[in-house]
Image 1 (tube, rainbow, N blue to C red):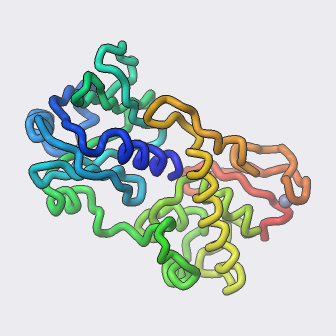
Image 2: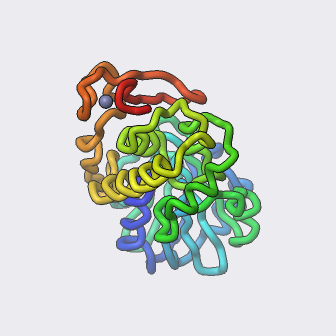
Length: 267
Ligand SMILES: [Zn+2]
């Protein structure tokens, strides 16, 4: 999530208020909604009015009562570059802006997606209204976390990644939060004690804020790499010593996602 939030803030600074002149779709599959022709024609000659995030969606309100939604999937990103700059082979969509600049959707895996439409229609198409509360919202507290995890018999790791239960946690965010809170990712979500819920809520907020302060792990809108990768305790550190107790970090897959945890100090 820190990667998405970083780009959202960069867009607010560098793109909001500017004009989108024309759209060029390189990979038709990258347009999730509506059809490609309608997508490009709807996006002609609009002004960016705002930039915000809902779960892992970047939402950009446009003039003409439209909303542009972008989802990075695993490796997607946006770059703001001069229109004349050569295109990377992994470029999926180019938005030609004013001042000879492009906003480019880039993804080496090709899974990133964009959609546009009137806000209500788009919310329906992307099922935005079924998303859970935002972990980065000032209202997210232990009461909210307790309510969202109550009666969830699923494995804690999978429940934390379910955006309908809690919006905004990525794979790394979830693993680092559970390590910080000292909770085993294989536990049932409903089994957490009141004290564990307090620790987990505080850990989630801290991990997300640290990630954002360090501007994530990937490149920002201007191509500058974030520093959050240097602040990882256990994520992608299999067999390395746990920073808290020196036990080698264990790797396993939970619900199809890579998971890292300390078998000794995460109970
Ligand atoms: Zn440990």
